Length: 287
Image (cartoon, rainbow, N blue to C red; front, top):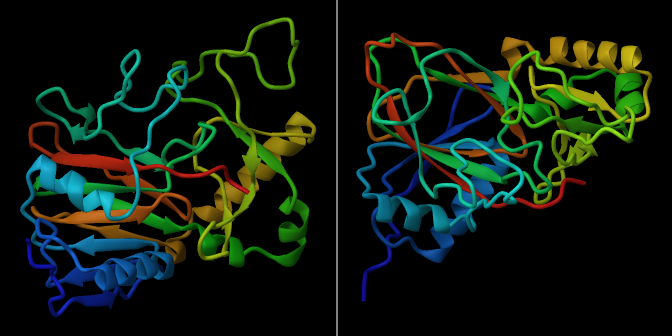
């Protein structure tokens, strides 16, 4: 029977609005229950965990991820990154080479799968090759962003519901029928309203549940009023005091709480290779 890894695990908080570095843990080996619980609590506290110097096969990477939850599986009619008819890969290559996904351009602040009925709870991203410059990932603390709002805004948004439209079902700027429009015209896809202010299902923290650029609609507000509110909230989000910038090293695994963070990627030179692998974990209905 394999020996469980108790080790001299160290979890060191970053000098940043979120994040902690985990050292002296080998993700390829079995991990003791008390260590798993310690890591889960650290994720609740710090929102992202950075595991350094990992060397995992795909099977070992999956086994490591399963300590934290089951796989995110979208409904067949709700495409996400890398979806194929009837299936979504278990491990998604986030790569600009060899048939990978997301290319080399900047990716705006977002959380994954917000347009689905049960957005993923978190993701693990494992770096195999990184460019010499650029391609950094930023993570933004959505609990901190909520807490920094003024009390009038908090009260105004407390009970609002938000639709996030699926970005994989139309090209940018392509018209689509909105939630409130003529019901005789079919929606381009099902829509799933979620709270604009959600409660984290484990920590109980309040979260400003909003991406930076994805097409959205506030239910029950006049379209112009809703648009102005979203613009105000997004301007609030775009502040350095809420985010951490991660420069990747080969062997890094970053595990982030998709329920309480946004992430953004810098552009990088398309002539350089950037190869990472992502696993996403199942989540629950936001409340």
